[in-house]
Length: 53
Image 1 (tube, helix red, strand yellow):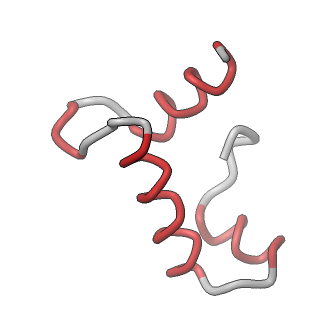
Image 2 (image 1 turned 120 degrees about the vertical axis):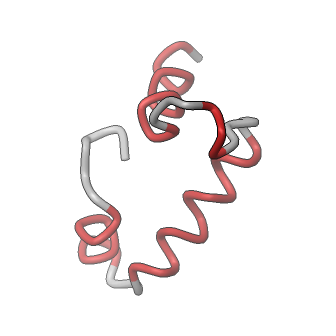
């Protein structure tokens, strides 16, 4: 995700289904408190939090 890959590209690299990537990404967003109604890209916000850690 931090490399800018799509869910499909991540799934291909990890040899898993795209739905598995989506499930885990949504779990990460939830743990970071990044709801869908934030009005911003949750992927970008997650990466920014990662870089700020």
